[in-house]
Image (tube, rainbow, N blue to C red; front, side, top):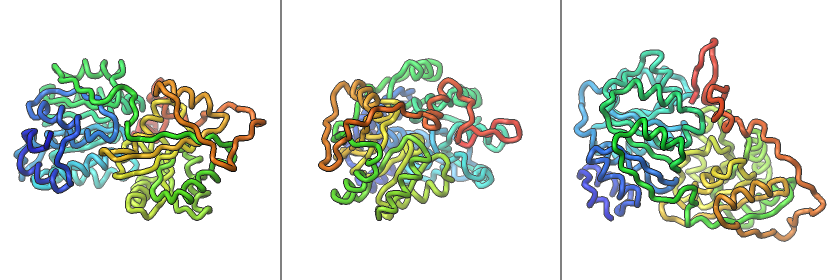
Length: 417
C-alpha cells in the first residue's frame, strides 16, 4: 500500500517523499489508519519494521493544527534509552518538517538546565526516558496536564529495565481522556497486563511472530577459542573488507578493551556503553554513521534503539546471556528490506548460550570453522562470569537497584536515564 492511500495530509506526504519512501511497511499500513481515527493501539513489531514512522506520522496529523503562540505539551513519547529518544525526536523533526511543530528530547546523563530552558519556551511534543521526565516533574519544570496522546515505544524493554513504577507514576500525572499507543517487540504477559490497565478498546496489531528474527538476516557461527576471538574478528573485517560493523560484547569493560585492541590492529573503532558520557556516545554513533569509524563496539543496553541505515554486519563477539537479546542484536541489520549478515564468534564456554538461542529460534544456526582457527578440543568449558553484565537483568526483580538509569544523589533517587 502506498503512503498516499493512508489518509495522510499533503504536508506529511511531502516529508515522506523527501525521505525517499513511497510504499508503507506492514506496521505502517495497519497502524496509521487506526491512529488517525483516534483508536488506542497495541502493536507488536520487531526492530527495522518502520514502527517509528508508523506512530509519528499519524500523531503529527492528529495534533494539527499547531499553535504558533503559547505552546503546551500535547504528546508524550516514552522510550527506554537516550539513543532511542534522540532518534525518535529526529523522526518527529523530519516528518514534521512542513508543519509548525516543536519537539524536544528529554533524557539523563546531560545537564537538566538546557532542557528546562527549552520547556519554558514551549513545545508540542516531548520524547523522554521515564527517569529524567520524573526529575522534571519533581522540580516542577514540566506541565503534563494537556497531554492528548501517550506513546510507549519499546514497552517490553522499559519493563525489562525496571521502569514499570515510573511509567505508572507518569500515567497518573496526565489526563485520563487521551489516546494511547503501545508498541512492543513481544506480547508478553507483563505487556498485556500493562495494556489492560492503560488502553481503551485497543486495536491489536501483530506484524511479526513473537521472538522472530528478521528474515533477511543471514546467520553464521564461527567456533573459535576465546583467546583467539579478537584475532579472528580482525581477520574477518580485514579480508572481508567490512566497512561498517556493529560488534556486541557482554560488558562495558569488554567493549572498551576490544575497541582498543582493534584500533591497535589498524581497524578504527569506538566503544559505546552506559559509562560513556552522552557526548561521547553521540560522537561515536555519529562517526560510525558517517563511516569515520569502521567498528562500533556496544553493549546490549547502549545499542537498544540504535537505528543505522544500511548496516551490513553485526557480530556477536560474545553471546548474550538472554536469548531474546540475540534477536534484538541481529535486528540492527537487514532493516528497511535490505539484506544483512550476522556472525557469532562462539567459544566452548558459550555452547549452552548457543543452544538456548537455537531453541528460541527453533532451528540450528549454520557453523563454519575458519581455517587456522580450529578450536582446541583440549580446552574445557568454564562458567561464564555474569558479573556486571547481568545488572540490567537484575533490575527486573529489583528495579531500584543502582544503575546508569537510576543513581542516588543526596539520599534521594536521581534517575539518569
